[in-house]
Amino acid sequence: MHGRDASPPPSPADRRLTAIARHLEGSSAVDMDSIAASPTSASARNSVFDHVVRAPEDPILGVTVAYNKDASPVKLNLGVGAYRTEEGKPLVLNVVRRAEQMLVNNSSRVKEYLPIVGLADFNKLSAKLILGADSPAVQENRVTTVQCLSGTGSLRVGAEFLARHYHQRTIYIPQPTWGNHLKIFGLAGLSVKTYRYFCPSTRGLNFQGLLEDLGSAPSGAIVLLHACAHNPTGVDPTPQQWEQIRQLMRSKALLPFFDSAYQGFASGNLDIDAQPIRMFVADGGECFVAQSYAKNMGLYGERVGALSIVCRSADVASRVESQLKLVIRPMYSNPPIHGASIVAMILKDRNMFQEWTIELKAMADRIISMRQKLFDALRSRGTPGDWSHIIKQIGMFTFTGLNSEQVAFMTKEYHIYMTSDGRISMAGLSSRTVPHLADAIHAAVTRLA
Ligand SMILES: Cc1ncc(COP(=O)(O)O)c(C=O)c1O
Image (tube, rainbow, N blue to C red; front, side, top):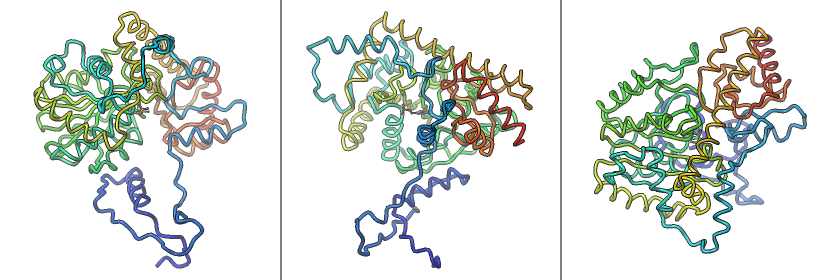
């Protein structure tokens, strides 16, 4: 009995989300089966949904909601991971505009449904982009690729497939990781555990902790790996560390599930950023890869991505694909055509591909230059602390090490918005806004040590 608390009991969905939230706060496993359904109130009310309680904003997208409500002219949104130009504007790549124009001008194009697995050209070209044009796995038809709704949808389809067809129901995700991972895999019915990844004192990789945790994982467990530009930490293993991870995982038959949301965004080079995945594919073993074109082609709202499953043989790959169709069909039937057509056109045409790589490199270089500018600005202010992690970390985000109190202070006093874990999107910064951010960090660090 909860005394005077007259609020209605939480719904089963609420209870699942609460379990996930508790997990995010620190415990290590979510077991969805143990969350029993609770009765819903049947008392007379105005709406049959009166019992529905307001859900909290998404921790990342909620930052933008708060930002939009702020009337300050100096406000700065460093929460969401979306690229901005030096002028602070969203960017549509020239090559994307060109591809769209060609699609529009082609009057023979129709709007029929795509197959359940999506656009065939897109799938073939996406597999080659991530695994390499000369990948033996591709040449031997051991890879099945299905077009999905961006990176999130690819992860979700992969998760559903694993929950139905894989003998091990435990997935290990890095601690910390992109907030949606826990929910995607948890709600698909997998049991989610974490492995150590980040070392707060060095603001680098906790490699020893990672090896220990994966070393003690049960044989066959699934392991979620960020292919590059780890979100939120900006910390990636070195090639030598990747090789050790690969050896350990293969020796224990752990199943790699790569999340590749930033190919080309980390180093500016598509092949370098895909290298960790290619190391795992080169050994002949099996793995999952979720690809997103949101960031590297700037196609955020088009929701274009792909799930590739690398199998031991062409026969297994084709059976796996047949089951993927059964996952997708009742979920969204088949994927949208427009974004995938843009991607396929760019990947297929040598000149357009070249143009894309140049534009992609320019985005990555601008982000890297923002790192240097922010680091220099903090140094010139004499801000206490070692800020070298800003230039050592890679990709869209810097995990600043600022605590939630300091973040709240920066939002209140400087109108700077970011997630409460201190992650900032470097892509949201410009030469004009770096001094404002550096002033805010300086004030936060000196006043709220
Ligand atoms: C690590 C990671 N994975 C996946 C995604 C999925 O993005 P989308 O569904 O927009 O492709 C993101 C987006 O921020 C991400 O950071």
